[in-house]
Length: 363
Image 1 (cartoon, rainbow, N blue to C red):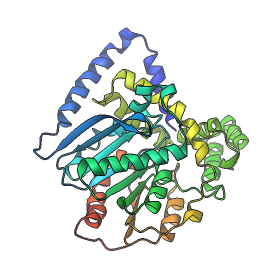
Image 2: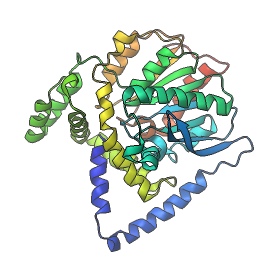
Image 3: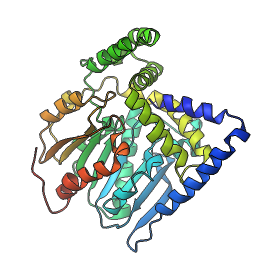
């Protein structure tokens, strides 16, 4: 899906330098302003960013929060290869209530830029799963936390469900957003809806391409998976607008990312396509719907990439000590970054009480 944004960015970067000078000047000003906002000056705050040895390679980890005593949140980003570190300015308010641990996965963002394609080691779903466990243990040790909240976005939720199910000793709660539900290829509703959107829009060539790819993800190559995601994003005006404004906007104005970092971001996304080979056979229901920790899903109400119906149907089958499903209004995919304040409201109303002293009502 980020391939659409990459196309927009590539067009901008191909523009003659003279024409880009005003744009670059505006970027410098906005990045300087954002850097001031990101300063953590509280006595008990933390702002540590750098490379940590995870799974045999150096991987980028950011740990930020105004109070180290707050609950710790470990993020698992989507894509694959779509590092969440670009969104730090958008989620500054979260850091007043939680300590946020952001990790650029193997093959993504600054981790990819640091080691290059030859320095990523074994880039497989199974290896990234083990990396996530190492990152979790690193965060617990660094912050002295017995357990941490697991926040998984989009493709990252494929890891998230398995981590939460298998390791309740590490996690105090699971929060899925842009929640991805794998059904072993049985559910073709998203594919059918995409075909209908393309047909209604008169996009005959794209429709033919989607039909040629087919509805069974078991048969898709990583390249077909990437092509399908790109067409899905382009077919929905809200998703496309969000990609341009929220995702590309966050990249362009991030004070934590140079132009070289942005180049590496897109290269990492291309490199990370291979990881989808590890999810074709996944079946989330077959793996189990019982979780020993509080379970939350906060989904964009108009998400066409990870549809609400699939996420809600899975949620309804979940057994957990506490669970809550909530829609985030007026947005689709990338809901937590499109409406970060609304997402924070949900975290404070439901997740924080569940991992501290209070307990919300199950719903």
